[in-house]
Length: 58
Image (cartoon, rainbow, N blue to C red; front, top):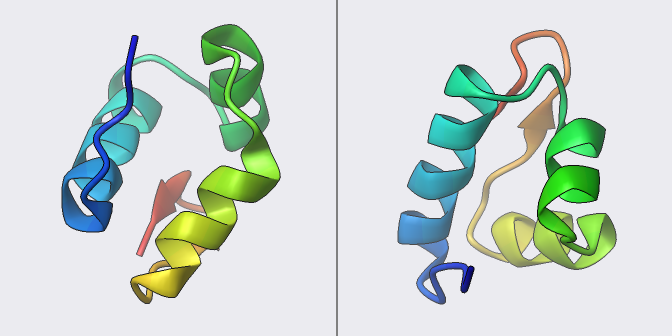
């Protein structure tokens, strides 16, 4: 599966997956074979950070 390239679309896609399918970001990245550091950096460049307590990017 190809991830959305646009940071806002990526934000929406990842949060949907976290909300509906994964208990945390590590589980999502492992299952979807995503480089966690690259994902976090890309979303951070658009102003989003991962909130571990709520299991979503904000």
